[in-house]
Image (cartoon, rainbow over all chains, first blue to last red; front, side):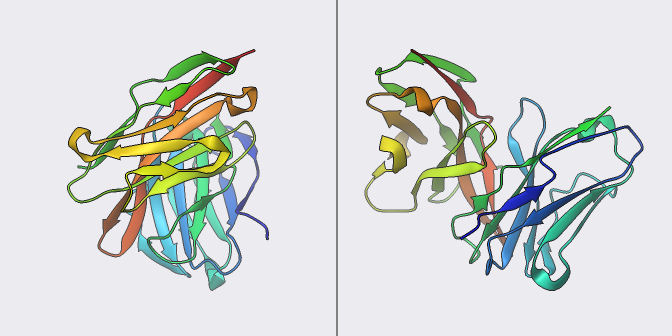
Length: 113
Length: 115
């Protein structure tokens, strides 16, 4: 069974550009999470989907970030326009039920120059 | 607010030596606790978890952790470290708030293993 996959593994963009990160959860997992790790700091929660609905987006930094999960399968996280402080590693995780163990992808390293 | 502290940013040990990685948490209720490991180019892999019951938890790759409520700690241990254990280790507590269940992570401990 495939794990959580994220694309791309690394993205380098200039300030002001747009970037879209993608996450494919484990098949059948209704819960999908996005987290972010800024250099040297802790991994922080961004938001939680249950199927296609946003359950909690309290961790989203600002309105330059838009997450979607159309059809309740894969999810995208768009940053528009990107700023320098958006650089970091973006992790996606999925779980079968709320409260279960979360399975993480390898992350997307975003570098904004 | 809930928080997790990993006091050691970097730890270096010799292969074959014992290892203990520290984790302290701040959480109002009985915590759900986790240790994850991230090797280069890999995702976060679950090493072990504590939900309830026996306070000494066994995990994969020969790791164990002990939950000590009185000390608010959940330290990770391994009796004999292998070179392949070099990675970054994250302690996390599961926070169950209305409508969602999310992890609160520590800042991570990067382990270097000397041959």
